[in-house]
Length: 191
Image (cartoon, rainbow, N blue to C red; front, side, top):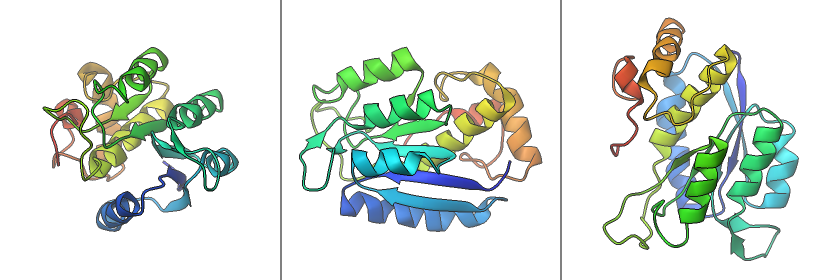
C-alpha cells in the first residue's frame, strides 16, 4: 500500500481532538505515511476530495461556513463513491435513532460502512465517536478495494476479509484486535 492522503470531515472540536489523539497513537504503528486534510463543511470536503485517497467523514455537519448541521456525510459518501475512493462514515448517534436511521439505510443500499454508537436510548448522542474502529475499518475497506474485493460491511464479511487480513499482516499493519485473523474485522465491540 502506498502513502495515503486521508480526508477527514468533522466539525465538532471535541470530536476532532479525540480523533487527533487516535491518529497520534495508531498511525506511528502503520508502515505507511498518512497525510491528513481536515475539513468542517460540505463545500470544503468536496474540494478536499479531489486530493484525497481515502475518506473518513462525520454524518452531520454544515454545508458551508456558518451553516446549520445537515446530514451532509451522505453527500460526501456519494461523491467519494462516484470517484472510486474508499470511505467510512462516523457518527455519535445510533443507526436506528430517528436522526440517523435514513442515513443507515442509504449506507446499506450503497455499501458504505457506518460506524455508530449504540445506545439503549435510540435518540441519545454519545460523548465520543468510535474513531479507532472507523480508522481500522477504513484501512480494511481501502485494502479490499485495492485488491478488487467488494466488502459491504467490514464487520460481517469474514470470508471476504481473509485475503485482506493476510495482505495487511504481510505489509506489517497492526490489527485492531491484536493479530490479523478473519475475526479481526469484528468492529462491533467498542474500543
